[in-house]
Every structure is written in structure tokens, then in C-alpha cells.
Image (tube, rainbow, N blue to C red):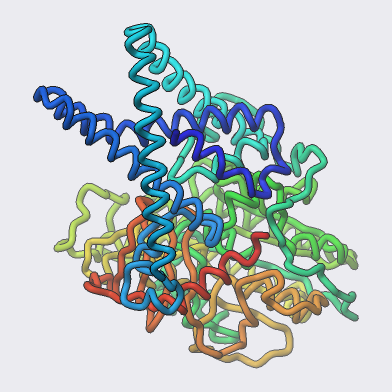
Amino acid sequence: MIAIQFGFYIVDSSILDYMDLEGWVFFAASCVSHASQFALVPYLLSLLFLLCRYRKTALVVQIIGVVLLSVLNYLNSQVFSIYHFHINGFVLSMVFGKGAGEIFNFDILLYLKEVGLFAVVAAVVVGVWYLSHRFWLWRRKAYAWLMVGIFVGSMLYAHLWHVYAAFYQHQSVMKSATLLPYYFPTTSNGLLLKWGFKQPRGMGNTQGRHSTDLQYPIHPLEAEKPDSLPNIVVILIDSWNRRALTPECMPHTYQFAKQNQWYTNHTSGSNGTRSGVFSLFFGLSCYYWESFEPAHVQPLLIQRLQALGYDIHTYPSATWADPPFGRVIFGGVPGIRTETEGKTALDRDTRITNLFISDVEGRKDKKKPFFSFLFFDLPHSFELPADKNTRFQPAWAFADYTKLNNNMDPTPFWNLYRNTCYQDDLLLGRVFETLKKQGLLENTLVMITGDHSQEFNENHRNYWGHNSNFSIHQIGVPMIWHVPGQQPHQYAHRTTHYDVVPTLMKEYLGVKNPEDDYSMGRLMTDSSPRLWQIVGSNLNYAFIIDKDSILEKTPQGSLDVYDSKMNPVKNYTLPVKQFDKAVKQLNRFFK
């Protein structure tokens, strides 16, 4: 019964346009295997009573459990059709919270309808149980083994086939998997790459289909070619904590910030690399990754750069195999670099610096504008030889995560991190000097930021690193712009990674559309207040509101609320009207 209900999720979905034989077989197997795990819950509860010889009670418990699951599944399908996500803590707070009446009007007719639905579902469940019981009396153990074989076989097939499909980007499989509530089929891209399998970097096999479930941009871009096009250099430092941008730790970068446009209240789109980079290049939340990747949707920014004839070059320190930025961000750009040789992060960061400088010095006679993306990795790796780990002391020789606790002195760990930042700053100093010597600062936009931050227990809640919360100490990063002809200025208003795409597109690349046609951001210089800033990915995301209060939807579906210092907020009342508006804004790039 539950598997059939799962099957109906695809009926009114635009994902139907993607489906082929491979997708249908996978989706059917997924429905059966996932439904068997849902149905296992009431079965195990009834088994406890059965073992105690309460046979009738066991039957009642199982039937009531399946009825509740079926009704919940029906309600979840309604939520999914409206909000494009499954029932979670946000939804429960909207329906049962104090402000529910602002959106939902539950009149007596609706209650009667739901009671009727409950009665019909209960009758069907009893009927299905009766048929199943008759079949059991007829076939006995053969019936049991048949069911076990179907459940186990469907589960193995669905997960193994999804491993293959996720690696080779089969749209029908990947998109249909997102329909089922809290279904997480297996992927093993890293393992397959290690075994020598070759993953497609380009657009892949789209089988002639367009992204019928997406509207990105909402309206076709209207643009004209500007009279002059600046070169654009984007520099990203992995795990860059704002507190490291000081004259002691990063003197060259600090001086560069003081001489240019310094946005001191900037945040990434998330607390992790995949989501942070996605937000920077798409101007959208990584909430869309699972939909964009299988549909081979490319960033409009990169497409616009190509249309204007830019030479596009990439300089990644860490490999782009997983997350597959080479395919998702730059998949339509031929010949880009997706990895760099080097035994250590310092070796690779040095190498990408040398490669960039060599390329820049060789551009003297080239008239085409260029776009360069440098991605440094050293502060993320915490790898430093002993002779480079001396500027700030005492410092750990390596990141010993077994020592981390809420009461320890973070200074030695923080000093190791600062020493890595100092080494990267020496490399950045060479980049700045090269751009200056070549006269490129007169016609080149330079942007320096981080993919996310790195926390060192600043909130004293025993949080270290990243990917564990959405406080400012994990999403707040430096942001520096060099804009030719502009005077130095520090901006204190909130800016985000989502603002980079609309600022480049509108101010420098000739795009006329409103910013919200293709991004969640606004111009970097727009100082108007921001409400309901989304951060995170499709599985774990949060809204940042009211002076950095955090409303987080966890991977398990619950709603956790924290203040800006990660103190839990009890008895929080969700402003449902504003939240409903925020979610609809979030989902506006879905059809």
C-alpha cells in the first residue's frame, strides 16, 4: 500500500518528462524497498505483542500503524506539492504553531473530510491485511520468502543502480529519487574514481531533454554587450575565518583590503565547500544542487562569460572530482584544469600561484578579456612543514582532533591555522604584485573571499571546524573587491555570496533583467535589510533572521532554533506568514 502511495508522487510531477525504462524500473524498486522500511516500524511494534502472545493486540497495533503511515504519507504528498520538500519541523510548526491561522483555515468541512479519509484508509488496510492473511494460509513459508526476496532484492537493486546512475548522471534515476520522503540512495563517486572509472565532465547525455521542472532563469536573459569588459579574477580560500584577516596574520591581503572595497559583514551560502561554491557561482542556494546536477544546468554567469568571449581559466588546489565542480560549475567550458599536482596543500597552492602568474604574464598581447578562478586549500588542510609553522607560537604540529573539547585552550590550534593563512598570504602577495606590475589592476576586477569559515569554539559550545552549525563563525567570511577607479571603502551592511552573480551580471556584463530573475541576491552595495536569508543544502538548511537567529531544518527533519551564539531557543513561535513567503521565494526556480 505504501509503495503504491509513493508511486503517485510522480503522477503530477514534471519529472515525468525525464522518465525512461531505466528510470521507471529504478523508481518502482525504490518505492517497494523504501516502503518496506516504513512498514517495518509497525510490524516490529506488533511483533513485540505477538511474542507476548497478545495476537489480537498485535494485529490492531499493526493495522493502526499502517493506517497512520498511509495518512501521513497522503498529507506529506500535499506538503511536497506546495513547498517542494517533505514534512519537517518547519511544516509542523506552521500547522500546529500559534500563527497557523494566518495561512491555514481548518473549518469543520475539512475536519470531516480528513476523518472520512482516515476511515477509508482504515477500511482498505483491513481489506489488504485480510487478503494477505488468506495468501499466507495458502502459501505459508513460500509467501514469506517471496516477500523477503522482493524487499531485499528491490533494496539492493535500487541502491546499486543509483551508485551507477549518480556517477554517470542519468537524469531519470537521480530526479525520481528526490520524490520519495527521506530517501537517501547510495552514491560512491569517490570510490569509483579511486578504482579508475572516468566520470563525464561535460554536459553529459541529456537525451535531448530540457529541464522541464526548472525555470532558471525565470525569464530569458536580456542583455547587451558593454562598451568595455573587465578581466575578472576570483580568489577563494578554503575555510577562511574572518579573524585571520589581520596585518599580523595576512599582511598583504589586509593591505589589499584596506586599499579597496572591504565588505566586513559578508556570509557564504553555507558552512561547507560544495554549498559555498555553488552559492557563489549560481547566486542560488545549494538547495538546488540535487535538481541542477542531473539536469546539467550550468551557471548563467559562466554562460554569459562565454557568450562575451572570455578566456576562462581555473586553478584548483584540491581536486574537483568530488564535489564535481569541474562538471557542475564549469562543465560547459572546454579544457579547464580540474586538479593540480603536488604532494601537500602548500605544494599545490604554490603551484597554482605560479601557473596563474605565468598565464597572466603571457597575456600582454591578448585582447580578449579573461576570467580566472584560483582556489587555495592550505587553511583547510592544516598541513605545514615544521619550518613554515613558526610565525605564531605555541602551535600544534598537526590538527589533533582527539584533543578538542569545550574547556581546552584553542590557542595552539588557532596558531597552526594562522600559520597556514600566513603562508597563503605570501602567495597572494605575489599575485597582487604581478597584477600591479602587468598594469592589470587598471582593468581587472579582483574578488577575494572564502567558501565558508572555520570555527575555533568562538561560541564556547564545543563547535570546531565547519559543517556543524550555521552561526556566523562557520558561514561568515571576508569579502574584498578591487574595482578599477573606485576609492577604498569599508561596508558594514550584510552581503552574501548570492550577491556576487547579480553584481557582476548587472554592473559589468550587460544583463538587464531584475536580479531576482536569476539569483537570490542583490547588488553588493545594496544596504537594505535582509530577511530570511537561506543557508545550507537541500538536506540540511537554515534561515538566518532577526540579528542572526538560526532556524535550522536538520537532516532528520526536526526544527532547531538557536540565537546567534548557538544557545538553544525554547518555545519559539514561527512567524508562519513570513516563513510561507520565504519558502515560496526559495522555490521560485521550480516550475
